[in-house]
Length: 203
Length: 203
DNA sequence: CTGAAACATGAATCATTTGTCATATTGAGC
DNA sequence: GCTCAATATGACAAATGATTCATGTTTCAG
Image 1 (cartoon, rainbow over the protein chains, first blue to last red):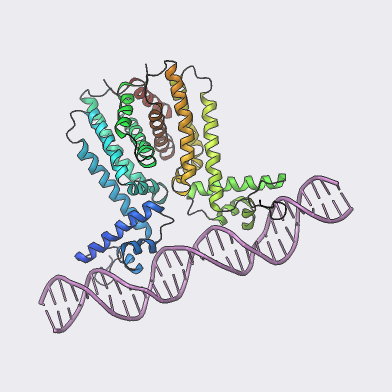
Image 2 (image 1 turned 30 degrees about the vertical axis):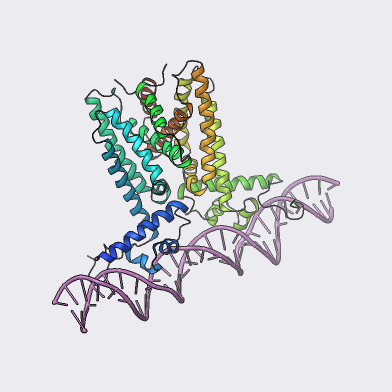
């Protein structure tokens, strides 16, 4: 067992308010710098400069650049789920919940593109975290669909396949209509997608 | 105007069979090395070792690591489109073509995960190439949908939104069912997706 | 055959950055 | 107001890996 009293673990939780603030400052700076320039191009120097601290201070709170990155992915993962849970909480039925969820997701992406970029980049930088993010998400999604099916709110079908399909569609629509194009009519996008999803493409 | 006769452009086309072979060897090695370990982790040394050539030789054919990468993205882009065009060529109607297209795409991804990884990583390594890839793809996709709509093969709707939605869904299904899980029942996945897309989720 | 262009080599260069460390400073609890 | 753990500093050692280059070898048109 490591002796935390003599050899303090790097990246142990801060013990004072001051420490907490510094750690937060690093995370926020990392979100901006990594989110804007990408993981590879972002240097620790960039991050600490933006955070207004010395380079060495970084290593008091994180073992490596990789570690902040993972922390940011986790943060984004939690945040997105919380946001969507909130947004869909009092929907009358599943399809309405899905619609509101997609709308909220697009708004979220437009609001914090940096965090979105970080999750996307996690695919190559921290594949396990990336995969965990989507898998967790998909699980909840599928559960909702199964429940909806039981209630007769959607036609029967493979909930897992559907969940992944719906996530995928949300992801790329976010990229296309909330990041690349910054003034798209998101309500129109959602309407169109749900016209397709609810009633199908067949004439 | 640069004088190509005295200062040969690096990355000019090879002029002999031998040169062509070497260039191809580099591309194939780069596909494997970058596709498996990621752009950042892949070193020129790794690539040239795998290609069986000296490090300096690399720079006869490519200006930088970035340049091979872009070339690979382009290659993948062309290849995927050709493959899908072929796979959907003699479909009786649009929805059948879409179905066959998705099935073929999943098979393609399962077959060459390295190339797929490269396109995904392009999002951060070569954003313009990444975007060009999807935009080109979406354009063709949307045209097909517009035509199908005219023929009365699909219900009217915003073809661009639909095109992106369908692409997004294919992308993440590829990741989930062709890369992460290597023995998924791809026909089942396609059936389920098309049940949803054709007839809709509403009971 | 032959010479010039094309191609190939790999050691050396060079720029970049990570992560460390010896040395301050801060502030909470006594 | 002292003391010690926590926090902060910034210069620097060490590694890394992309790119260059001076020199050799191969190819092929004439």
